[in-house]
Image (cartoon, rainbow, N blue to C red; front, side, top):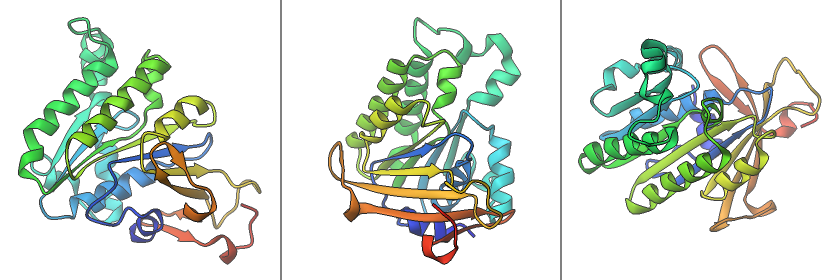
Length: 251
C-alpha cells in the first residue's frame, strides 16, 4: 500500500517531527502523500488527526482512503476531525465565513482560530495529534497575501512547539511559482519533501521524484548527508517507490 513511500520519507513512525512541509512543483500531484499520511495516522491507536481541506473536499479523501485500504468515516468525529473549507464554500456560497471577514479577521486568522479550537478540544485525550493542511496555495486563490500565508504557517509552527507530540504537515502546490513563500515555510520545519517532475518528462513506469531533506539545525538544511531521492509511481490502489538506479530514467 503506502508503507514504502512513508518509510522513504521517514514518516512511518508514531512520533513525527513537529513541522513537515511538502513542496509540490508545477505539473505534478503530491496529494497522494496527504492520503498516505492520513491513513497511517488513523491506524495508530488513540492518535488524533485534523484534516484541513482546501484543495479537495472530505469526500475525495474518503474515496482515496478506500482505495488505499482505510475508511475515514469510521474515524470521523472520533480520532479524526475535519475542517472542510471547500465543501463549506460550495454549500454556503458567499455566506460562507471563509469568503467574508468575520469580526475583522482575515481568512488565515479565522483558519488558525478554528485549528486551535480543534486542538484545544481534542489534544489532551490523545497520545499524539497531527494537523494536515492539503494545499496552502489555495489560500492565495481566496485572496490571502503572501505575508498572511507566511504568518499563518508561523502560527502553526508555534502551535506545534507549544505541545509535545503535536505535528503540523503542510503542502504547497506550484512551489516553483511561489518559491519564496515555499522556502520560508520549509525553514519553519524539520522535514521538507519536494515532489518534482522528471527531467526526462513523462515516463510510463514513474510519475515523479521525491527529494526528502532533514534539518540539522533550525532554519538550515543540510546537503548531502540528510538528502534522499526516490522515484514514485501512484497506482489505483497503492504507491510504489524506487531508488533512482532501479529504473533507467534521468531524474
